[in-house]
Length: 108
Length: 120
Image (cartoon, rainbow over all chains, first blue to last red; front, side):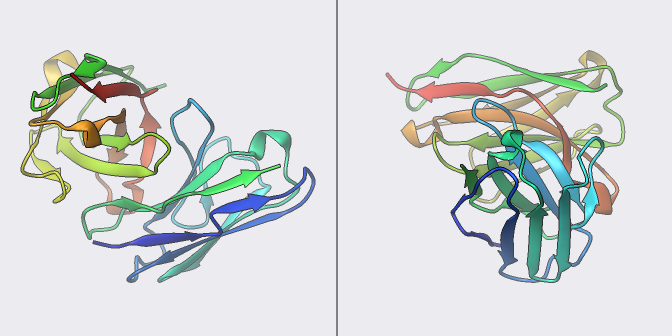
């Protein structure tokens, strides 16, 4: 099982600032099999990025992703009030089970 | 726009079987993986398993001995059965879709989630 470890657990920032979230895998997931999701209270997760760096439909360009192998980063530039949420990374490669990171909370 | 909706009891007694159904609207179930994912209160996300529209399944080893996921394409539904539940199975259960193409197997559509509480 691939273990995904996200850091930090919590990020305290203000609107307008930038957020850098990290996701580290216990073994390589390649560059094409890593997704990021955003979850707000009481809602289902929403797909933000896939293939580590490809924005999903409708996701604003202030969200960007990078990385390959075992180290991945989600960057949110110019935080908007609606960006304060919990973010999860997830691998969806051929190595099952598919797993999620424990989440990073971006709070004001 | 594909929509998924979970349904089923919100309360299950310990040692009994949890059964949920996900109804898929506005789209065919063909050539997709149909997944169950759960989230325990205040905790992260756990993939339970998937069913392909042909009925092929794959489960998380952590739950494999207690899980059955089935599909009924004629009704645009797939279902989850989890046996011998305990309080540790209390969670919000989500259904979600993934593509069969390996580079596209992220979860692109999710249901709203349904809370299942295990309690006597």
